[in-house]
Every structure is written in structure tokens, then in C-alpha cells.
Image (tube, rainbow, N blue to C red; front, side):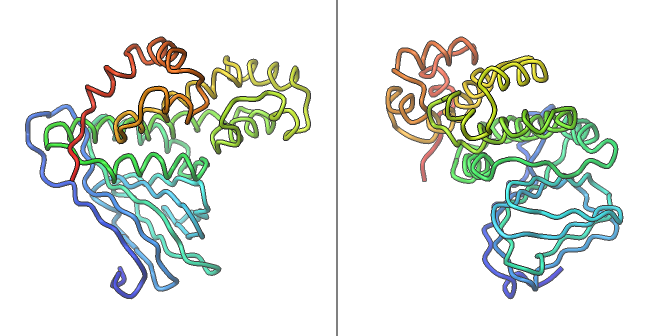
Length: 280
């Protein structure tokens, strides 16, 4: 492993020792951000003692897991199970900016095993979604006990997103294009007309194929994603419910509250109270 002082910029957050109060929770061992140059290289011939996630924001990296090579490009997530030999380094063409997370726990280990079954290690997301997920962690400060619960919930959400990606091999290029357009936040307010124009398919064909392959509609997929994203503002900002609704294209405060309560099984205000955080 290189001296990071010579490799670029880094931000590191050590999660610390468990309080011991919650034996059932998975743990984030450490998490951070790197923007590194061509000198950066990490090799673990015996693997790591924890599972590892690498989320690429900009540039590219080269990753090798058990001798198999993967290219870490913007919007990709690479999952490396514990004890698996691996190497990762900056690619030859540019610096590499990425988030990383070491984690451990019985539940997360089972999920990681499911995710990487059949040598699946690389998954494609939108860079905006990755940034939002990690920013929600790094910018949050909670008292110790609350943070352990938040850590486990945050980790589970990421692993479930990766698990969902494992079934996308069964999706057609059209459905994958719809998913990526929605996840990359191409349309703040959902518009089937704009989606059809961008993808050069009729609205009817898009809805029919998407529904057939995913058992939901493009609008419903977008709605649930926007509700999920809005949770960040509920927990990290002092914006009003109406302002958050407008930010995520969800109409009035009343409509947003109604949709949030329907799908999240709790009102936005109740969610905000349950996820109170401590400012620096």
C-alpha cells in the first residue's frame, strides 16, 4: 500500500468501537473518500478482514478480485467480500475519485454472499445517487447509540440496492435505459413524454415493457426513488415539508405527505423526529 500523502486527497472517518448494546446490528468499520493519482495502489494478497465497497465518482480505477479484472468507472459499485485476494489502483488515463466502506456483520455477510454469487462484483448506478447515499452518511453526526442504528440501516440500504441490481441481467436494454434515466435524475418532475422522446420509443411501449419486466410502472419506480431521496433532506436540513416536496417534484406538501405516509408507513414529520441528528 502506498503512502497516501503522495497519492492525492483523502477524507477518512473511523467509525470506532461498538458500544456493545446492539449485538444484532452490522457494523461499518471505516468509511472515506479518496481522489488519488497514478501512484495509488492497494494490494491485499490474503484479502481484507472485512467486506469492502468501492463507489467511483470520477475518473477510473482498475480492480482485480481473485485474478479477475474489473474497470471502476463513474457510477459503478464494486463489492469485495472479506478474505478474497484483491488489488485496486488508479487507472492509466486520469485520477480516481471514489468512496470506500469497510463493513462487517452476520446479516451483511449473508447479503454480500448473495450479491457476489457467480463472481458478480460490479454494479452500475448513477453517480448522483452514489454521491447522495455517501453524503448522507459522511455529513451526518449522531450520538453514539443512534449512529450505530443509523450505520446498520444505511449499510443495509446500499446492499439491498446492489442485490436488486443482480436481477437486472434479465432486463432488456430499454428497461435498463429507463432505470438509468430515472436514477440519474434526468427528470425532476416525472414526464413520460420526455422519457419517450429521449429513448425514441412510444410511451405505450415503454410502459408495457417496463411493467412486464419489473412488475411496476416507470412512474411508480420514480415516485419511490424520489420518496427515498427526500429522506436525506428530512434528516439533514431544516427545509419545510413543502420545500422538500417541491425539490423532488412531488407536488404540494399535502400530496407529498400523503404519498410518503402511504409507502413509508410513517409521515414525513414523524420520520424527521425519529431521525434527529446532532449538528457539529
